[in-house]
Length: 300
Image (cartoon, rainbow, N blue to C red; front, side, top):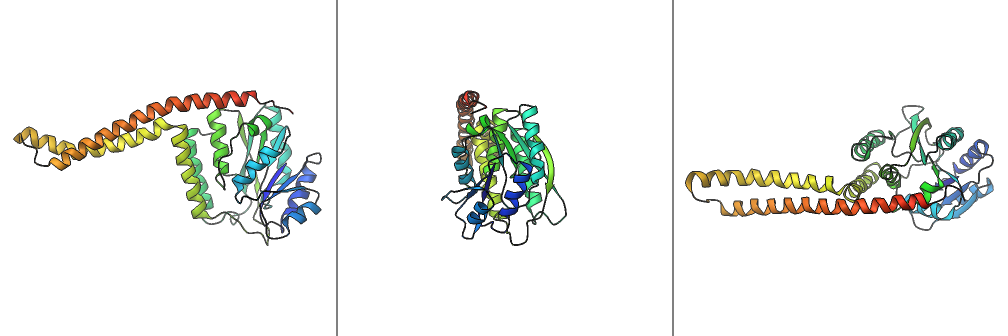
């Protein structure tokens, strides 16, 4: 079991003990992301295996965890005390019995004050955006509580550095079309003395930028087709009046407008060609990722 944390001394003992009771045979790893409080020592005293990742950011921690830990089933949860440890056995059972590669825990708030202002709306918007582009299989994309197979973990590139890592995990699963599922579980308010490290605006924008980047990388034809459509519409809006004037008078009265319209149309078709070429490249990349995923053994 993997627990990324930063300055969570007030909660980490409860997290470790809760999951120790729920999963008595599991090895619990706490990855301290350069905390400035007693998080590492408290986790160690609670019986966890404590390691440190010097690069700040949840994505960096997840990359290190996935590279270091060798096991058959991975349970990843944030160390902030908001997730229900008793849900872990059901998540693992679903993964094993149905031969899945990832089971996501959909958060069910136990009270109205659990989510900070804007978090619920942001989660719905970002999850809806990813669902519209990559497939509608998860309703809580940003959950920090997941159970994953060895094959999935060892084939995941983990390129993100911060809280956008959950988005990358989701898109990786959807793009490879691996078997996944989602189960609901209670989501609690942060314990007293614990503060969220997630910034609604800045981290939300980072996640949005990652989504746009992933659309460009994984759906280049769709991405560049949108650019093609926008440039074509602008070009036609500028060029049609010039053409109509020429047909009526035989003169081109607005030469700069005509040149700009023609240039935009050329750029539009160049964008479409880029999308077609990159779509072929992406298909080859996706096939290689799929082959590597299949080459990873499910057991050590």
